[in-house]
Amino acid sequence: MKSRALHRLALARRASTTVEFALVGFGVMLSLMVILNLGLLGFQLESVARGVQAAARQAAVGAAAKAANTGTFICPTPAAIAGYFSTYTSSALPAAGIGTGANPLIAATWANNSGSATEVGLNVTVSATYNWQPFGGFFTYAIPLKIATLATVTGTLPNTGAGYTPSIDTGTCGGQD
Image (cartoon, rainbow, N blue to C red; front, side, top):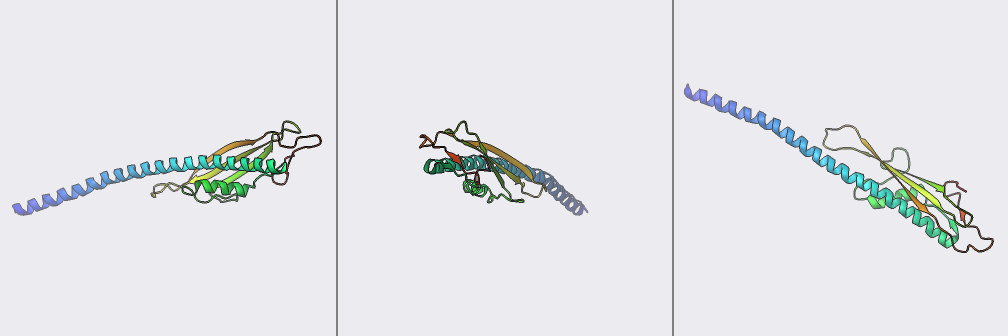
């Protein structure tokens, strides 16, 4: 009889240990998932920010280089700017796009900031929206991250002699005159 009581007590202790482990283990696993997700969120947020800055800089430098060679600002297309973004973020994010449903979604707009006939310039605003999805099965929704930056291309173009007016290609630079 005594042996049977000891056996039941041993089974009860093993069961309580299992329940305690399940409760503590769930908390530990949840904490680890939160820490990993916060680290991934920070990494991808920084990747989006750096990618937007790099894409805007690349677009501005490209427009300035074309203007220096041809006397006309020829702006990179939004698709080309999305390609610049993807180049800089290829290890952290999927490839960017410019169409509906793309994740990350890149938008680029050009604006004329010319001060005079000989001081022609442009502003490019590049923004990226990335819907970040936590992993681990605890979250079923995406968190939208949106970053925008502005880059300026300005200055006096070469050959500004009499009768020379630098220009902006209205077909590639958003229809600005």
